[in-house]
Length: 198
Image (cartoon, rainbow, N blue to C red; front, side, top):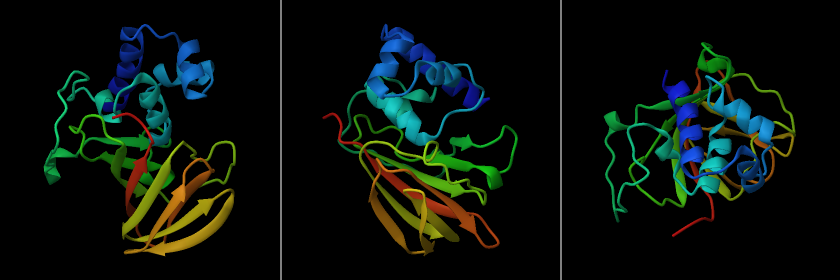
């Protein structure tokens, strides 16, 4: 249900800003058809796509969740508690386990005007290397493996195997993806830096 509300909120914010799908497509570099598909889907797009859309709308990703407000005042500092970042975004087949996708936990959702977007991501075991569909977005990205083993792919090739405590920092405009290896899904702290406002 949360995923459906998120995609509906995308449309609501776009319409409130009097942006057509065509104009949003121009601002994001995504196709009008893909944006329409996102708004009418019961599954959210990858977090990286949400980052591009939210940047174009002039909002934070967290504004897409109904518990936050796009009119919230700027705060110099916010504290997050473990039980406050339970909202997650899934990528994969509807109703499928994390094995075929990703689960995102949004951290620091109440910090407005963020240049960094932090998440804890649980990574599935399956991935298909596809230079056209792999994640890519403007800015930089930092991945720190909290637990498990992760195979990281960059520009269409297996780049490295990361264990708990390992990290990778990279230019995010190149295709990238990952998959868990071993017995359990890897959990990764991901921070996206977007070169944006404020």
